[in-house]
Image 1 (cartoon, one colour):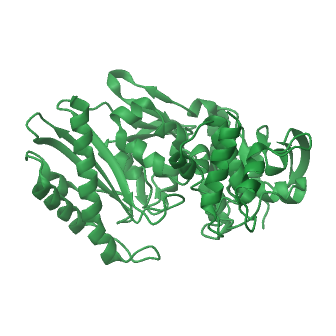
Image 2 (cartoon, chains in turn cyan, blue):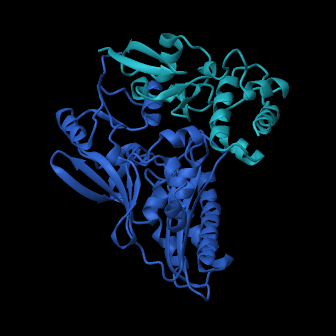
Image 3 (cartoon, helix red, strand yellow):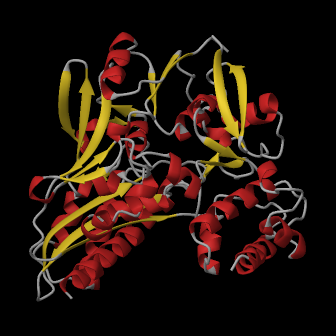
Length: 155
Length: 294
């Protein structure tokens, strides 16, 4: 039996009607229409589907969409504001933190959650915080440098 | 896909009433195991879901009389691993919660959900055994508590009856003289989103002369449930702790392991590694007991 659900994504309210077993990722991509968050493994291994729930990272493939009602959902589409890229996005471009790009939305959201809670992370803290995000191009060095650069630019 | 009924109780009373009306419903806390498991076909998605994430009275860590601790079922792994009292007095549990999944999993996943999922590889299982933890279960009929080691009865199986909800994990107060240290660690291939190949939890009470007065040792991922290994404890209790004694205990633990072959490791490799990981866990627990003195 389908149920109505109100979601707040990047500050906008969306009303959807879904089967309650649906995961949040499929609802964000197919009902809300934001395709930044990616389905990689669909098994909580890769982090390509990472979004923020009330500011904390969540594998959206492993969350029931119904359980996200009333929570603040942020996706990569909400990072840039007023036509200006977020400092993390700028740093990812400048430091070569993007190769094929599939992991990038998830990496950016994990990195945002980290810098929001810890504006001056060490390299070890950065690597630990993105440990649930896989980059199959193995571009970790550039990604870590990008997070460091974004942190420095916000100081 | 058959129709799924979804309920979201606002408080514990509503949750108990819903579960008594829908005794076969699956209880969802963070959802991290259930959503993945049902999709991969490991478990059929249940016809009814009772999502308890809004039952705020089940969230949080509070001290109990005479120094015990009550951890609400909905407390996240992130909140357990960063709790100063858990870090100080129940270090092995903080170690375990810090190893679960990734930062994302630890924010969403709950200690109650982890226990009820009853994985033989559950990180918190060993620590809960060495601390003599109990779990509190509530139903419309009332409340009861069960020792953790009796609650988990097999892979994915628990002693919870239909209509019962796990409401808290309870760590009893323990004697801290002589100083006590504890630790949990695991063998892993990846540092995140990993399932323990082998895990070991150790607790030791060490006196000023370096003698072990009490010991508890438990293993993860080498039997149908996490298991306590008394023969290994007896190898170090009453003895001065040195490498020889610790290695003997580690070998005794390995002899009690009943591992399986699977994609992550062969049974033989797991048995060999039990000795390595147990020795490391004991050494870390001893170091922490000695730090506690200073």
